[in-house]
Length: 113
Image (cartoon, rainbow, N blue to C red; front, side):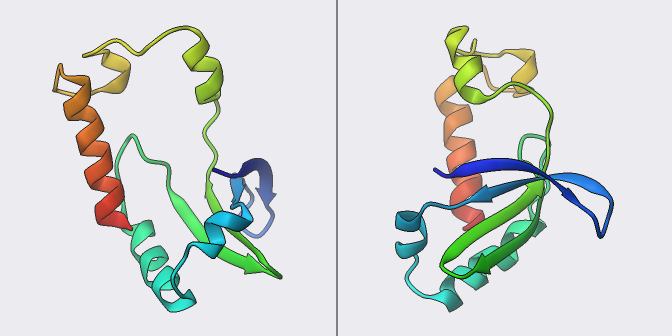
């Protein structure tokens, strides 16, 4: 769902992740006003399992997100090790059901956007 780059925010002297959205993702947005309204709500999300969104930008025909940089392995690399265990403490969920955890993530995503 886009390429992610590690970058330095020289204004605030911090490392960030910049996610460049693919053209088809940007073209699916109904209008720039709708997109901006959604993006204005995203920085209000504060959850230990969601990275912080610092900024949303548009340059030429490219949409991008500036997010908190989190050191660690990629999801693709992690999945090579096998499926996540239900109730895994690293997921920090109180639910033992993976589907319940997935529903919670979907709800947060839907509510935010």
